Image 1 (cartoon, rainbow, N blue to C red):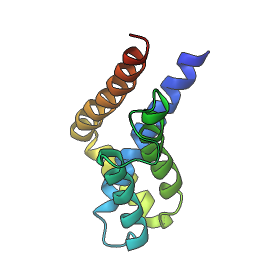
Image 2 (cartoon, rainbow, N blue to C red; image 1 turned 120 degrees about the vertical axis):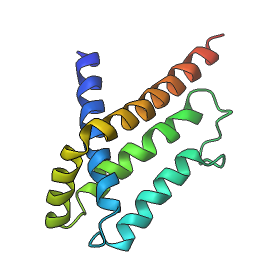
Image 3 (cartoon, one colour; image 1 turned 60 degrees about the horizontal axis):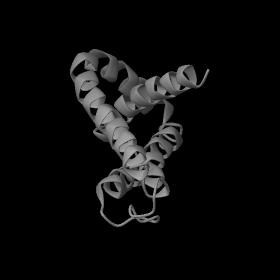
Length: 121
């Protein structure tokens, strides 16, 4: 059902995010990919949005969609050797990165839930 699809999406996003975070440090990663990834991160934390946060629900959807879209798109643009090396290094660092990514993901989910709850108050 829906929860299984959501869990699968979050697991894939977490794994791809870890690979992207490792690949960003690799000097072989093209500057355009690094710049686009950083732009996605900055957009998520920026107070300036395409859809203002004051707009109920939709104001958070753009923030919640930008980072996963950037990760899913950019990871496919990584040179194959960089992506393969980043996957290996991400697996080695998995316990540490997993803890940080899990906290970020929980904060992201909490923000979405808070937004939905605040709409219906």
